[in-house]
Amino acid sequence: MLKRIWNWKLLAGFALILGLSGGGLAYYRSTLTGAQAREEPQLQTAVVRRGDLILYASGTGTLVAPDPIELGFGSAGTVAKIYVEIGDLVQAGDILAEQADQDELQAAVEAARLEVLNAQQALDDLYANAELVAAQAYLDLANAREALKDAETGWWVQQPGHRASDATMDAAKAELELAEEDLSRAKAALDKDPENPSLQLRYANAQKRYDTAVRNWNWYTGSPSEIEQMKLDAELALAGAQVAAAERYWEQVKDGPSEAETARAKLELRNAQAQLEVAERKLEEAVITAPVDGTILAVEAKEDDEVTGPFIALADLSKRYVEVFLDETDIDKIDVGYEVEVTFEALPDKVFTGQIVRVEPSLQSAGQFSTIVALARLDQDQSGALDRLLIGMSAAVDVIGGRAEGVPLIPVEALREIEPGQYAVFVMEDAQPRLRMIEIGLMDITFAEVRSGLEVGEVVTTGIVEVQ
Image (cartoon, rainbow, N blue to C red; front, side):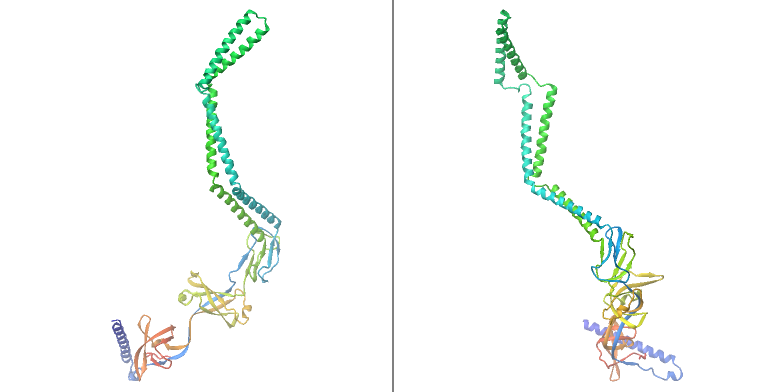
């Protein structure tokens, strides 16, 4: 089915071509007069030949420095020494300039190193002392619990009815009764002989015994005062709070440092290390060295100047780059990897070659026109001519969109487009034009590359258009 459809389309295309050719001849005959009308239009032909075909877009360009490197100190300061001038060739590692007051930067580094050591020691101690801290916490918890127990006992024994056991109460009562009876007998004996020293001493001892017995009995059977009770309550509450705090701390440290403590110590260490890195970088950048081999493009300060940013520009000019400008209509003729041919106005007899390495993603506006901006790197092997180029030189640039060398070529007038991208030609066979499908490659406004379907030397028709 597909083959039949193709044949039908092929016949239809062939009929269309013949129809157009016939119509053209009729028009040709109807418009010619006199001797011209009697002449038959000649079918023009061309021979398939071998040749070169190059597709290119022409534009302008400027020699530029490839991504200049701007250099300055790591912090604002005074320029102590500058060792280069514009145009100097330098090698990677060469010293370009030095900053003043490097002793202060060195002191800042030493201070930052000390902070790192302290933070590291704190983190190490956190782990090293974990067992000791846990043991102390457990001991503190045991002591707090013992203190609470003592406070509870002290509070309890001060309450009415709980100041002594029944046996103690009975003993105190018996002692009070005996002391009272002894005091009564001693008083009676003393009343009979008041001047007797022995009886006086007996009475004094009996009174003392009685007073002690009364005092003990009153304490066992009495209650604490309001102030004493408030004190007892406060001591008990304080002991309970201390136990709760000791239990919380024990839970935190019994399994080692807490996550919060560890995270805090690590954060402090990282902060100290970051500060050290900053201080070391500032000290290192107090001496500007060339990061690559290159040429000094700019020196925008002098010794004793205060600088706050980059003031030396450096670029590797061993690789030369051209900034290319093309009309936006040539967008299909440029891409990364395309070859270029560059001719500088100052060197019109030398053609430099290279490749497109970058195409900017947006157009550049110049008045009413928009241009494509690209970057081309010139080839290194240019017989030493690169050394003669100066930044800023203007050039004409041809971007090679395609190149076919030594291939079969036919005039574009010979092509008949059957379908988009599919072409045929009329080939002269036995003095008659016969339709043949071909495959083409590159094509400009004049010639087309034949990839298959024709051989060099074959003859194709170009209609009534004469071509060279």
